[in-house]
Image 1: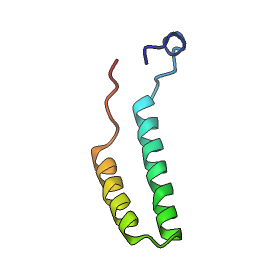
Image 2: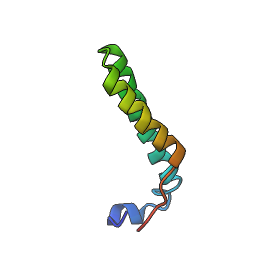
Image 3: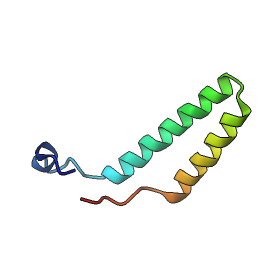
Length: 64
């Protein structure tokens, strides 16, 4: 967020927290799919718990 290229672009941080949250969720869902594919119940359960935490937490506030 401190990089000159980011600061020079007026819209670079527009909805950045919400976009980042979507990326987190997408990564989590991708992991769920993988654990389903390989039938790893322990990995599936752990990922589901972590994904629920991320979903409940919501987007992180921007700091900078």
